[in-house]
Length: 264
Image 1 (cartoon, one colour):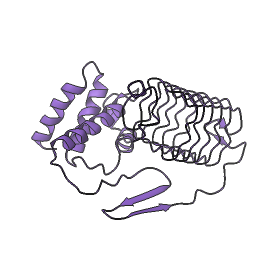
Image 2 (cartoon, one colour):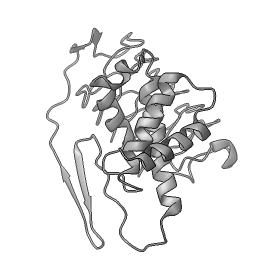
Image 3 (cartoon, rainbow, N blue to C red):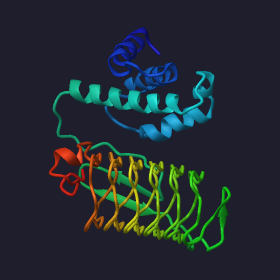
C-alpha cells in the first residue's frame, strides 16, 4: 500500500466516517485503500471481498465484534469506486464484468453477453434442518443463521425468519409467500424465481441480491434496502414501498412512492 493510497484513504475516511466506531473506520480505510489500487472496475463486489477479509481475521484483529469493520470495508470500497468513476474521463467502453456469488456466471464483452447456469439440483426436502431451522411451512426461525445455505426450491411459506442472516444464501425458486423476513440480511443472495408474495420484508437488506423473475406482489418493502439488486422481470403488483432504497440507490420517497421505475 503506497503512501499516496494511505493518504487518499485517510481523507476519504475523515469525510465518510464521522461519528462511526473505530472498527468501522478501520474497515473503511482498509476497503478504500484496497479498491483504490483497482479503480472504478469492480472485480468482485464489496460484500464478498469484505466478508472474506472479516472471516479471515481482519475484523477480529481490529477488535470488531458487531460487524462494523465489515460494513466499513464495504462502504470504503464503494467510496473508492465512486471517486475513481468521478475522476475518470468519459468512455464508450463496455461495462465492467461483475463476479456475483450466485449460480449464474455472466461474461460481458462489447458485443456479446454469455450466461452460464450451473444446475442447482432438486428442491430442498421439507424437514431439512439448517443451523437449527427446520425447512417447512410456518417454520419458526427468527435470527436463523442460514448464510450461504443451499435452499433452492425450499418451502418456507409463512415462516418467521425475522432478523435472519441469509447472506449469500441460494433460494432460487423457493416459496417464501407470507414469510416474515423483517430486518433480515439477505444481501448477495440468489432469490431468482422465488415467491415472496405477501412477505414482510420491512427493513430487510437485499443489496446485490438476485431477485430476477421473483414474485414480490403484495410484499411490504418499507425501509428495505435493494441497492444494486437484480430485479429484472420481478413481479411488483401491490408491493408496498416507504423509505425503500431502490436498486439504483435512490429512495422510493423521492421516486413517487415506488421503486418500480428505478430498478437500475
